[in-house]
Amino acid sequence: MSAAAAANASEGRLDVTLVKLGGSLITDKTKPRTVAKEHLRRLAAEIAAGWSGGGLVIGHGSGSFGHPEARAAGLAGGAGGRRLGLPADRMGIARTQAAAQELHRQVVFHLIAAGVPAYSQLPSAFVVADDGEPGGPPPEPLAAALRLGLVPVTMGDVVVDRARGASIASTETVFEFLAGALVPLGIDVRRAVWLGATAGVLDDAGRLVPRIDAANIGAASEAAGSSPAVDVTGGMEHRVSTAWRLAQRGVESLIIDGRRPGLLESVLRPPGGEAGSAGTLVSPGEVEDARE
Image (tube, rainbow, N blue to C red; front, side, top):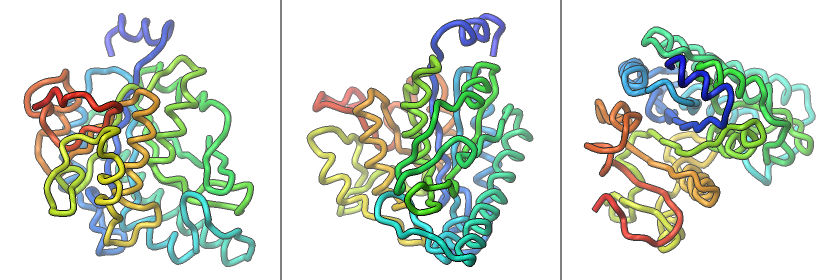
């Protein structure tokens, strides 16, 4: 970040982009605790090349690390989970978080190796859930890190839950929380980029849905379904519903194929080129798609 940009960020409001690296992309979800290192290394390099120094928060899923442990422990995200209370549950909480953090350390390592000033920010340190719904005070350490020009890195995590004892806060849930909680701290989330192992949101026939808005959100959500692998947070369907709620707050989302070399770098750069027609755009309203 330039000296002028840093000065502006420290004095005025700061615009932020959220980027999620999907668990199905950076791990092999069919093999326990297996990192897809070729994808992770490349994506870290693309972030380093495409990032202009502005506000950026990176989150990642747990893939084959946290999800199997969470399933075994009876942990779930969102509303409707059971209350935990047995000693075995406490060990399940600990094992699930440890597995997720194992992947988190690798994500942070690869980002730093690529030249990104990655700064770990675990949701369990700033979120308290109430029956699966995250809450808490504005996350001042994360905001301060952004204003220093660092890139906070967060993840899906096990958080304390007032009703259940503990629950899963997915990366989607954490992003939605941040979009609201950062506002009082002078930080506005403007865009979210979601990377997975598909071209974007697909319809029932397997064709890309280029845009989701008020006219087709219902059909798109139904078609999104859920991940065929072990996923305690709802897969693509959860991502679409979160992106739609963010759209109602004025946050535009782009759901893209993280397997395509160079695409993330292009998306992070100023608008144009390949990024202009990539993936699925989630935006409110029923206006004509400007990318057509």
